[in-house]
Image (cartoon, rainbow, N blue to C red):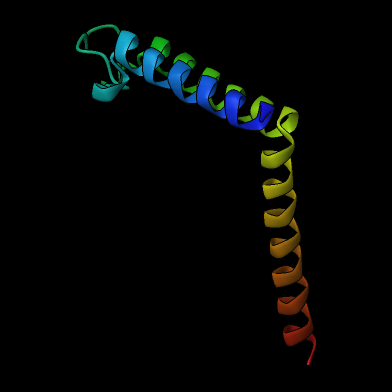
Length: 91
């Protein structure tokens, strides 16, 4: 029950952040090209928002047991594939 409610809250929070911040039209490069000699002026606000969302997803994966279980299963599958690949290389 708590997992479902936490998932719902995270989804609502993500939709609100995307709507308010305008991440649906993400522009990593700013329009002012005169401030950088290479012509790639990065919009650090967008990068910070994206990093914050990734951090929020990481915290949710640690705190919500269902997500933690899915991440653990995924990591175990990756380790098994890596071990299988090492065994095939050794033969």
